[in-house]
Length: 421
Image 1 (tube, rainbow, N blue to C red):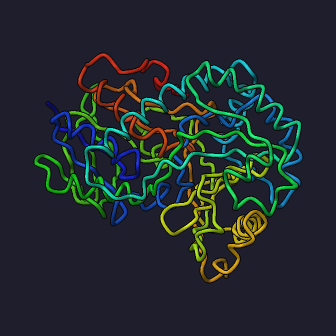
Image 2 (image 1 turned 120 degrees about the vertical axis):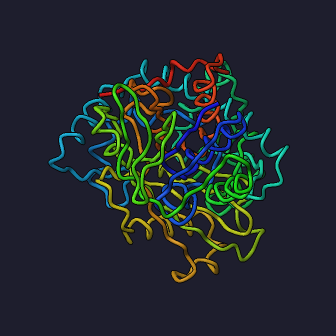
């Protein structure tokens, strides 16, 4: 067994800590915030969407980008910078926007997602953790007939990859989710996946921290800033913090977009760029008027997840630098779309009742996370999950644990080998 230091206590780092501690390793988690899951994991979309993991880079995306850039309420927004890393990322993203690359990435991501689903279910079945977990199913709602027809054509392909889905017309969609009755005339159809789940990502991180707190050999050090990774010869030897050196046999970097600067002095160029996303958390005043099933608006790229007595609404992808300031126009768009879909929720949507949030989702150009060895001995990566961090966290932790233990991985780990620039 090894002494392992994990940098980052978001859902990726905490899931890794849980899995590695379960293998008997001595685990130390270092996190600059005062608790776990306080950055990108804090108020994400809440959907554990295992069957919908297609990368952002797809064959039709580039054609949509010019139109998106001209709209204030666009699902994607681009703010150019002089940073060459942004342009390298965009060039690699453009190369990945083709059918063959997208289909290959989707197949790999589905394998990891289904593995993650199995591990999450095992966790829920065995641990006394309350984090709003529920299997509510999911509806992808299409307002455009051509878009719905294209989604229907993919059903057989998705089924061949292990997805269980069905197409619903507008009436069947509203029968399944009455909260959509107000926009029945705008619904061309929907794809229903009964097995999809919801949960609160921040509460999941807190639950993991509580379970790990009194576990022998585990140390959770919050409020600790990581200044660099120590190296002796050809391997890492520990982590330098504002409280001193933390020695380690292995270091796992799971620090989201902050991982880029941390890895660079070691010669590891991680091809990540932050996709800034937004959410609002809306109190549910009338349970019958709020959706029970998770919903994704296919055109607006906005997701809706009922978590306890709240509705989490999330979306957008702003290609900006590491800026977490809340753009009020983006929040206003989420609120407006929510009122349009679920007019009956208006009493709970006074501006002072909404809980706005913005976070930086660390994305690779292809949408594939980097999980495993870094090329530097003793240094392991668990980064680049983009908008799928919560969905893929447990599976990524499983792959990481298999690698550190030298076990045969549960799924092909070469799919997620580090794509270093």
